[in-house]
Amino acid sequence: MKQIDGIFSDAARALARRTSRRGFLGRLGAALLGSAALPLLPVARAGAAPRDPAPGEPSRNSELGDPQRCGYWRYCAMDGFLAACCGGSHRSCPPGTEMSPVTWLGTCRNPADGRDYVISYNDCCGKDVCGNCICMRHEGDRPVYVPSRSNDIDWCMGRAGIVYNSTVAIVVGVATEKE
Image 1 (spheres, rainbow, N blue to C red):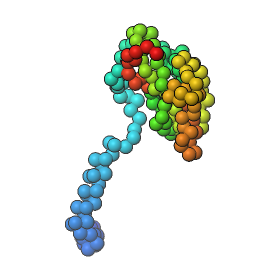
Image 2: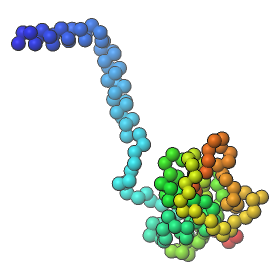
Image 3: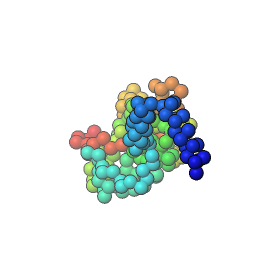
């Protein structure tokens, strides 16, 4: 037993010679701060409850149709691949892509509540072209010289080395006037 006590005693003295209280407190503080930042890391929250609709967006009860089909009401001015078929959703880009900051707009009627909504179509840029679920609807499409209403423009063009992947359809608000 004296031999084991001696080994631990020597190890404790050697550790005390190499470290200080300040160094120990500094490492302890860094570990606590690092563990506090751990919940900020990106994680899949598939089990989380669905989020509430944004202001001006229709309620979940008034959403008719399948976001993975071209006939979904939000896609009335769509021209591209559906992000919902490429790993994202109708309002979020697939992983590994980023949403283009410039968009084109459309006005689509929700058949569930009979209201018209302004839809922002954002291209998802960054990976190869998705190639799934092509949707080419041109309701309310304007010529290319009216860029904010044209769905024929590749909105990833302003970013060097970034290619088009797919498109999302985000409700901006309720349309107040007819076109």
